[in-house]
Image 1 (cartoon, rainbow, N blue to C red):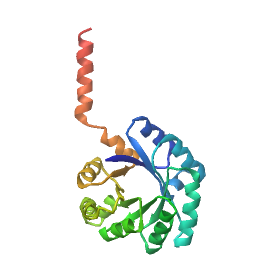
Image 2: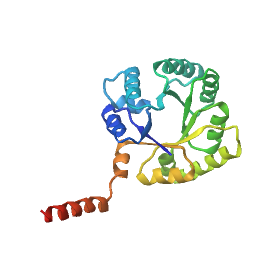
Image 3: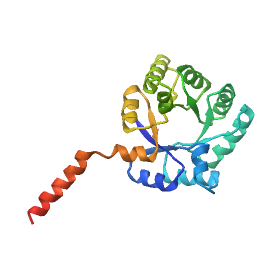
Image 4: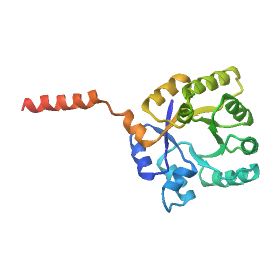
Length: 215
């Protein structure tokens, strides 16, 4: 499974990329807005210079025409840009039209298997089920990943990838991989948490103490 960073913070992206594990980046209007005073296009292009993989840039239009117009513009910014659109009827129209033009899309805000199926049939490059937000309403978000993976396996014509989003814990990453997700996109703090374990820390301390003791 591939690991993406869910961030528009260039320092976080630069650090995560240096670990050698990053295959792409996802952004959204909220993440861009958090980086005060930044220009959307230049931020996406800077991210693309740091990470050689898909970079999701999200439209803000609610109608298909607007999404297509924005998507065409985003696609000019860098070959790795993936146009992110919401899972709505207008979003499906935009996905179909953009796909016919060779522009890849990420259908976001997926909360049920039907949305994921329709997005794939419309030509989505990737779909983003929101695991954490589904958990928040008392439903099993990882189970949704399993359902989507099962549905996609039934149709050899579907090559849409499953991107597990709204990742809240390191365990979500592991369970997403086991459930059949192709990608997990994570906040930087979750990536950091994934590399922490008290036994690792105590092991390092013990090794260093033993080394010093032999001096």
